[in-house]
Length: 229
Image 1 (cartoon, rainbow, N blue to C red):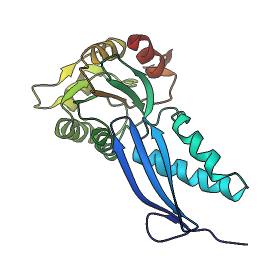
Image 2 (image 1 turned 120 degrees about the horizontal axis):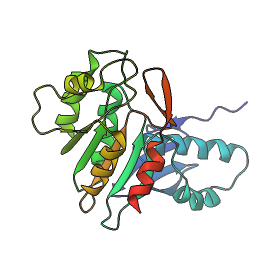
Image 3 (image 1 turned 135 degrees about the horizontal axis):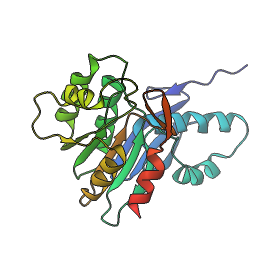
């Protein structure tokens, strides 16, 4: 069996460069001593790398590289993983992401900053009955990387949601505090200016919100789409 090496160093399928131009990213590939370019729309870097690995898999199955080049710009996002939920006429974009840990939140904001020359807005909360130490850390990270922070409820479960939000906010005076996640999303989207990005983080692909022991229908993606119209 042949082993094909993939990566950004010298190998069989080499990613030589990825240039990001707002909502368009262009990946340059060196494959069989030839250069190829693949275009992606509204894709973060980690998704582009995953997609290119899928491209290589398809090449190994016999698909033509020229055909795959035409398809990558039409790829949909992965549900809940920097998933594009909508665009405003101003060029502002709204993404849904499952990031609910300090590391994940930091990574997604670093990626988002590369994708815009506007301001970065982040909307998130923290789950109740879970790691409490991360709340203030996530608040600090949000303050450091974003221009506008909206703190709202995630899945409070049996904890007091107001207390959770206060622990996230800490001493930050410029955070916006919303108890209702739906209203927070509406506010966040209406606050966007030209070319801004809003990341709605924490729940991703989930279709519910847990309050005490009740599961209520709640879908960040569908709500965001509604307010983008």
